[in-house]
Image (cartoon, rainbow, N blue to C red; front, side, top):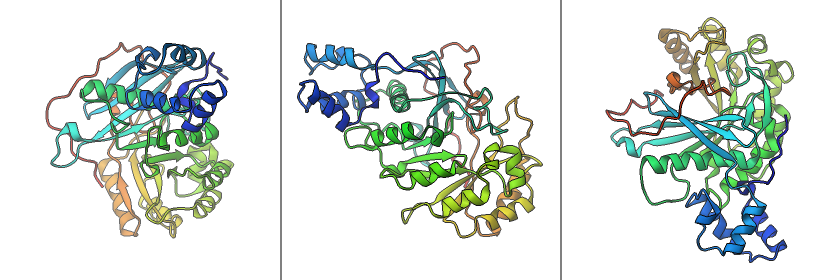
Amino acid sequence: MRYTPALPTIYGETLDSLTALLKEHGHPAFRARQVLTWLYKKRVKTWEEMTDLSRPFRAWLAATFELEPTKFVLTKQSEDVTDKLLLELGDKSLIETVIIRAPQLGVGQENSRKTICISTQVGCAMGCKFCASGLEGLKRNLSAGEIVHQLIQVCRQEDDRTPRAHAELVSFDNLVVMGMGEPLHNYDQVVKSLRILTTNKGAKLAQRRITVSTAGLVPKLEKLGREDVRPNLAVSLNAPNDAVRDAIMPINRKWNIAKLLGALRAYPLEQRRRITFEYVLLAGVNDSLGDAAQLAKLLRGIKCKVNIIPFNPHPEAPYARPSHAAVTAFQDECKRLGMPTYLRTPRGDDIDAACGQLANRSGGAAIIPLRVRKGPPPPPPVE
């Protein structure tokens, strides 16, 4: 399904593209910076709020651009300070965006570190057997503006949660492109959104604070390595050999582990960066000590780390989460074999916001206003 809005969204413009368009229509170039300040710093919801712009210019903007490409529907809150935002697009499709809070030791909850997980597609075409996002297949790609606007919606929610003077997009510390969809399957729009988010007059995010996750589209990985904007890279590996990966990730039948690792070995990494391998542990499938040994051998020589993710159950997947003892044993074996391995503490299980649980459905829930939680913060993730 392809969706073409009546007007392009303003959030799909960079400073350069907006400046060029204004010049083409006889408007002063400096207006572009003013507009982007209203969008990213003050996060206005209407053109009328841009009070230092003339009424005729605001009317031209309203006739040229869509200001709100996503509509906030509801938020679900878990007991572990994870929020899942349900957003509606112009064609009534639904996407999900997650706020993950990780309070720092000795620091109050209001100063906790925040990671935002955004979506790039409505649904997903990859068909990974353990993931809820692709249950109904791919419905459509998101535009760069729809991708960017998710962050605006998150920051508006955080502004309401903790009233403060508006600032640049500093409401979060890290952005992970790991929500609904395969980012590299929507390559052009995702790369465009990254350029918008990292420009000086856009969101001004550092590339090192952005991580893009992929199931392993090898040609697009190779292309990403040649871009001028290059985020951190996370690869959903989830298996120590082709037999297991073929069974749980259909993409492996086209680009197997050897082809994937070949592309990753050639991927240009800055000196202090590493590739992150995501490894979802499925009970009785890929969680044995032998699997750990194969994994360590497989990744030898790659500058990387491994994030172990105990499977987050959902009714449609025929898998179970391994026991705590099995997870610990797997991690210990990986470490014993010299592989930097971290355990990602499941967050948001109770609201279907954990890794692999995002799906294009609202569950018929009513709108739930954001509220400040009381009580002590949860412990930090185990590493």
